[in-house]
Length: 485
Ligand SMILES: Cc1cc2nc3c(=O)[nH]c(=O)nc-3n(C[C@H](O)[C@H](O)[C@H](O)COP(=O)(O)OP(=O)(O)OC[C@H]3O[C@@H](n4cnc5c(N)ncnc54)[C@H](O)[C@@H]3O)c2cc1C
Image (cartoon, rainbow, N blue to C red):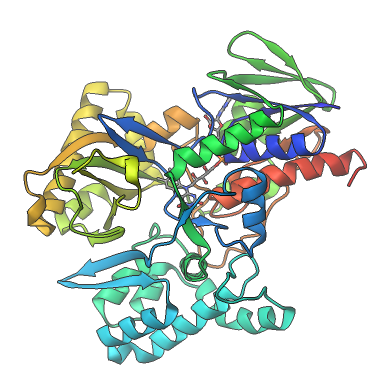
């Protein structure tokens, strides 16, 4: 048996811990927050439960390998999965389009909206079906995994979308609703392939929401780790790693402890890890190149949650609407993403409901909020101001909500930075730009014999499945190094 010290108790760290224990190692996690889960979390405010994370969880379809990993880590298992009929609805000028789970329905809805876009619509639907055949995406409705000929047939169709941003994809359509539909789900710099893969995942019954939401999922993973004999120290920040030559020998914490380590897994944001825990120049080259790449960016978002004085909100699921011009300029964001939680019983008191709103922030905006937080009164006032503007926009769109919304919380990229240590408050990996091949980077760190990286940043655009995959891969790497497996 050997001691693996894991720094960071998010999904990557918890998965690494669980896989380590299942492979006969001892594992201890140091997590700086008071609970494990990282960005996979939620919190209570005045009788409401705010859900921070899962909009869709890739791997909820039992035929996928990702599902098997979620079961192994305790994230799923017997948990019921909510499978909505649509992933999101974009509306504009009194018209709307939903990303239906049924691709034929989506096709028909798009054609009904804009017959003159028929060729571009046919191409998009063909690519969506092609993306559904990719191994990790394919689901029950396909009844099969992807074969090599299928993969080869899909690639040329997908390649077209690999070369454009979601904005460029939107511009290929004449109809403004389809234009907005294509670019509202992700930040503007995302490649269209990212949208196709997300849509295909959802349409393959592989992007549901586990019952109880994000916090419940994190708690199940934490319980799984503990039940296997793992040791979890919450509220403890790792502050450094001590070395003997090329080998890490211990981890220092902010409690003044020095913890012996045979292996160290770094399950934190690399922009934080390399600079704070390890020398900056230790960062693996492929990662460094992405940080320095002029077209690869990071992002986060501004959020507010509203208690709603109606038993059911006037819309269902995720609703995207466009900011009017002055707000778009001010917030430097084009779309407001609204979300309601009627699929969850315990998220609002009886007779009430919850609406959460968010919009994406560029890296520059993230840094702005982080700087603002140093002036607490101004920061608070800014958050209230934006929440007020968003509430006004929501009630302008849904007049029945007038006088029925009460802001119960606001949070920003600065909040994410504060709670997870992520450099610019980012909670996903790199934005997935066109032409970038989203290869999975291994967690090896050149020149260090027993320190391994496990983070969502190892494959753009990150997310829960990548975090889990990175955690699992880190343990496989340790086993490989030791001559096992
Ligand atoms: C609003 C929002 C919506 C999202 N929606 C989705 C979605 O629908 N689907 C999806 O797949 N993903 C989604 N994500 C992304 C998902 O939450 C992340 O990809 C995932 O949680 C990242 O896990 P991680 O373990 O790599 O990193 P993190 O969650 O950042 O975990 C790192 C952990 O390390 C801890 N830590 C940092 N420094 C130290 C230190 N020095 N010592 C000890 N501990 C430390 C932090 O506190 C944190 O708990 C969403 C995230 C947000 C915020």
